[in-house]
Image 1 (cartoon, rainbow, N blue to C red):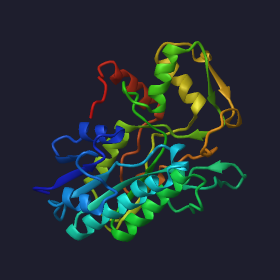
Image 2 (image 1 turned 60 degrees about the vertical axis):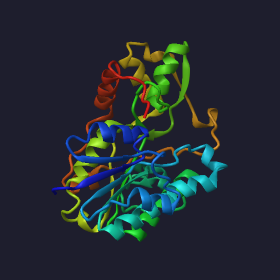
Image 3 (image 1 turned 45 degrees about the vertical axis):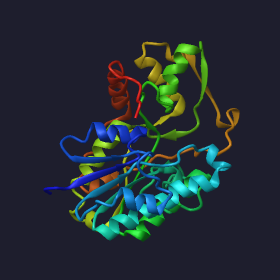
Amino acid sequence: MNGQRFFVVGAGGQLGGHLLDTAGDRSIVALTSRDIDVTDGGSVARALAGLSAGDVVVNASAYTAVDAAETDRDVAYAVNENGPRHLAAATRAAGARLIHVSTDYVFAEPMLDENGAPRPFEPTDPTGSPATVYGASKLAGERAARTADPTTVVVRTAWVFTGRRGSSDFVATMIRLEDERDTLRVVDDQTGSPTYARDLAAGLWELADVLDTDPLRTGAVLHATNAQTATWHGLARAVFAELDADPARVLPCTTDEFPRPAPRPSYSVLSARSWADVGLTPLRTWRDALHAALTARSDDRPDLR
């Protein structure tokens, strides 16, 4: 669409940075926390004052400190629930569209297959009552956004990493610890789908380009992660292997041996079926994505956005 603009909210974050890097020739309005306070309806209205019919807002902003949220409940809900509500109100008023990024933490209990084993979550599965403030606040944000603008497309993802220098994500942390410690212990009884932020960003742009097609024109909930699964221990060993370090230096431990303020799900794999069903390109395997991330890191500089 001629004149179409794409507003990236949370442009200073890990996903936001990759959204800017992969935007191609799209007309981008990058909004960091200096430009917009999603918890303040007035700030959102001012930052999106130029929003027009046909424009797209991608919300990559979130309160993601899972443990801190347990005692910082008000701030978590202000960002994760009120923020999407304010953005969705703006897109609905302008006739624009909202893509809102959410999380696997919205689910409360694993879904079981006919053999009683955990199976990947579908968007249509019941969310229940999430066990963490983070998860509950993100679920509230999904609902608030879809109520304020029913055409909102929610994209749930999981275990997002960049590996960039200066980042605090899991992969970047493992890179740092490989250099600092002889051995380390990593949880081996939690399973998910590691997701490279750059792959997710490219997928979100593909989604943004087809929002006006069926069935997306009326809103949707989709899941997007890199393919295949891992435990945190398996992911850490893969990082070491990419660094030509001995993966045996990464020792397994249980969740009980590594207690955290917020409980982590034992199984939080998201099914990619909904993504493929609307014609979007499945994301490559997390192992291939990890290799790409660490290869790109050799030319990377600290992310100063």
